Image 1 (tube, rainbow, N blue to C red):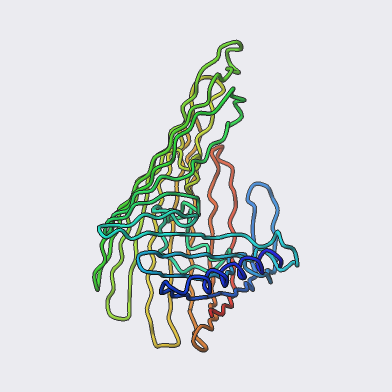
Image 2: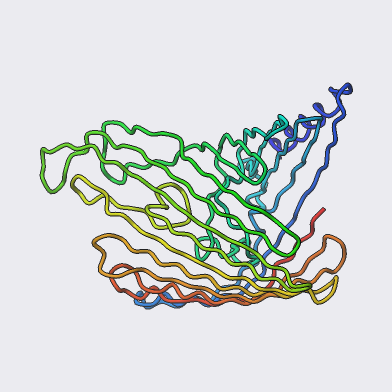
Length: 353
């Protein structure tokens, strides 16, 4: 764990080397283990797999936050496996933020404005209905300005040649923005993003000898909100994207048409989550998510949905057991082939410190 030791030592050095500045450090961690049984039917492929998962979750983490006057920072490391291998340690988040009074500037690798963290679903390393109901944009590198509830970020773009073999790729930063408000019993957010890049001098496969520039354009809009009713709550969210997968959003990707254009992939998804806190030690939650992808020139729309139910048991401060059961319907692909379904049951074990 040489990399982890060096990073912690560096943080400690910074902490003790700036005595003139009031620095407030807060270290934290979360250890997570998944114990699930699942049964998967692959549909028209004709296979069925029953499997026991007894695995360390790769989103376990250790990190720290720091505040010093008008500056704020965070680092967070993730242990991707239990193997004693330095490469298993990765940087989940690294953020620096300057509060300049009327707003703030952030330089970060972390969560950008287009994320809908509404569900507590724990299967598949805390999947949270992401990509099957709710929007997720990952943890890219970005520059962000924030003014109250409004955020806008310029983000490292994601580009791929889509099998075109271009002479070069011209790209601009991806743009994401969100605006939201929160009250005691209600909160809401609206969001949107766009990305475009150009594949230069692409040779047509349908008309050999013809070269064209191919524009790959993606955009997304979304909204979500939550309501509290005493111990109960409801959260809803949805989004619509065109070629969202080409921009690293959880949506379908557009494909090259082998000539001079892109077959667009239009994705809409939505989800709902409801729960209730029974006591300080016990709460319940359930959720449903739906997604539909519509690729130009495809025979069928691809549809998928999933549902889950769970209880959250607090054994002691920071100590959780979360039993959960769920079902996925993978629907049919664009060629109308059945992709099957699967269901699971088990629990996540988590200790936060």
